[in-house]
Length: 143
Image 1: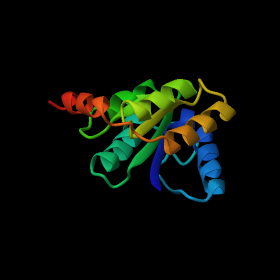
Image 2 (image 1 turned 180 degrees about the vertical axis):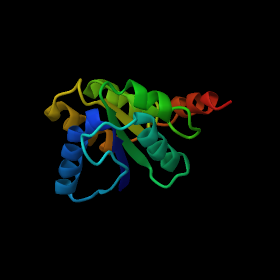
Image 3 (image 1 turned 90 degrees about the horizontal axis):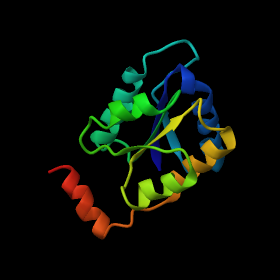
């Protein structure tokens, strides 16, 4: 699976850890849209790049990371065909995929510990959408 990932400076370290984690798993190709250091960068620039690629179906899944995750999720959800879910635990990750077919996982780099964040990414990428009544609800979002 090809995924796209991006962060601001507050999420840079976690983004790098996630890239290493996915590389070790071996079945992911990761496109990194930045930030490329912990030097200050405006989060909307990165969020726009990731969300645009998801909206255009160039990638099926993405991950965005900023300090709290709030700013990235606000920007990403402005795009049609993007369902960015700001998650804080495994339960919300699982439901974001099963019920909402979330295609971008948003994480708070200053909120989550590394172990939990990696487990969340793994769950996000391995959980399928249930469809059924949830599909009808997704269609209602874009009406």
